[in-house]
Image (cartoon, rainbow, N blue to C red; front, side, top):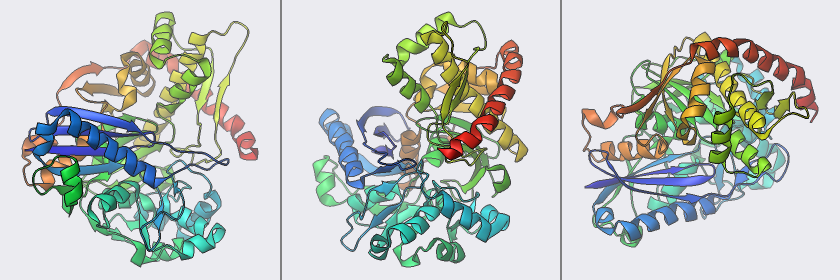
Length: 488
């Protein structure tokens, strides 16, 4: 008896095949295309998501036919906040507007003024351009003909579910990121739907993440060599499923995720809103649980972009930087390539490297980028602490978990002790597989346990102290450039 976890990320689909004990049998990934056709815009064709997801399952079926024949449930995870607008034939009306899209900034400000702090707290966070609700209000005003043709409105992973099962279902953790979901009631908010010009009839049914939520079409089960009926678990948004995979489910458990974007998540046993701090307070992917989150739009992506600029492999740059490292960089870097949420809520913020001179080396620039990301995470921790979420130790997951050197800089800038576990890079896909196990009724106490820690990375106390004035200068640099970013 085996299970699949599938995570639809911004740049790739990652899929893992596990047994009932959660041991990974095989994994596959396939790239996903997205585009930025105009300033502030970020979008992707949902049909390409399906092609990439199916390609990972085709790959696993070729490589592990025996194990795939025993699959009884699939869990889904995906990038949050995307607006997938479908017509009466379930065809996308336009490319999905993604989480890092900033076009709806005016609509977000309008909704914030209309709802006020009380509604921001109830709906989980102050409305921000990347959330689903402001995007639908933007569509109503800027693409009225398309808006009138909407017949269903799904989130990213739930479009895959529709293709897999024919069902329109979501889960509470993904719905939580729309700005029209009541975090206390774990249900759609009629008032917020009206404000966002979203018709309640467009919306999917809401389940908890560990619940069965559809059955795989017979022709797809045959395509992937799955012998019996296959349940599709409700799953969750990637922040919540990443937390499930890391065992971050009980009050006070914490996780730091470093993928295309970055998050620090602290689990909670009740809804604890802190919208004034730009901290997200959302439903978890498990019933009766919530979490607080500092969400940043740039995680490991600034390093990927720097590698493209410098025409070098990321691993090569990291090794070169580590060999040359002598303490804090004399350069300062802002990592805000596509704007920022926590703590700034600034869709116009952009990246910068300050202090370049004729002596600057490639290793200097790499270190500046690494430290800029670390300082961004220090800001995130400060926002969480101000919101009452204490985070002294956290599981590190995602692509950024590959480098112990980078993790050391992050630990030293934030003061957070980081733990690395086997499969930390699988993140949300592994969490989705755990939800699949639960949906089939095969889980036990070990299913949600934190994976065994393979390495602990403590803050370097001398470096922590050396970074404190640099972090203040980092903040000053953002404040100085903020008016210039807004002009852009």
